[in-house]
Length: 76
Image (cartoon, rainbow, N blue to C red; front, side, top):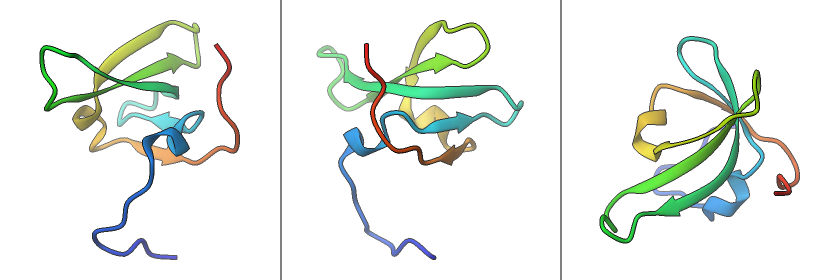
């Protein structure tokens, strides 16, 4: 299956997805946030699969990461 250009989904659909960065570290998407001082940047909160720590990074930093879609949302 190929994703067509100019396709879109709600960011909430990605909650709970498994992210693997280029170094092999794995994270679950917890949520998406916008800093009110910088409305042009979407940030993503990630849960580190190894130690459970939550980090928040710019969504654009995930451009080289792999994503595995997972059903369901992560409960806080």
